[in-house]
Image 1 (cartoon, one colour):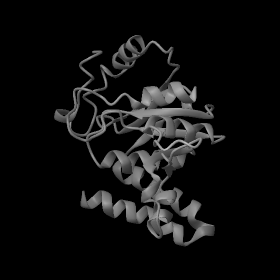
Image 2: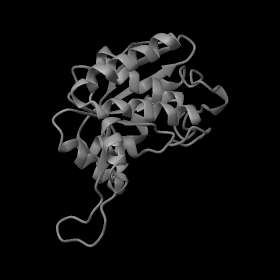
Image 3: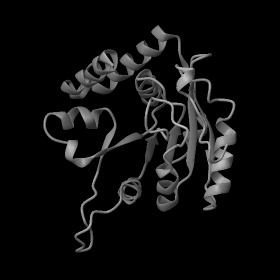
Length: 217
């Protein structure tokens, strides 16, 4: 936990030096991967303008550190959904710099009811020319036998594909190697996604925290 906080601050330092920040961020990212001995293979996602990216299993704060380094070096326009209320000065500078995007759930069209998180995230994707909305479907670093399915509904509502990725701690490699186009048949699609992750569920940093969704596996 202390390390993840330290790394978040470390990644935010270049923001102060705006003109050199991109270069510094690349240097930091490359240094992290070199020191930890990690590589990546994400070519399949590079031609995609808009998508939802799910990364599983999610078992450690290291997932964010390594994932951020890969996204920076591969130039993937990743965004992490965070409620807009968290974007206040000076924290907003760091959040934007780390790839966060504010999710606005304010009532629309004269309604007094806040829109759903799924609708808000889908709207955020529609508003961008290029975006990769990253979601960890387990929603926690602890073991979870039922995944949160918001990622699927966001992709359907935004009419974008779902990129499937994972961090392989056995060979130390960040991988995105499948672009999945949801059909709208959730049961069928989720079974296919579980089939993809079946031989990858043990590859997280902490294997005792990894599990497929029992409803479709």
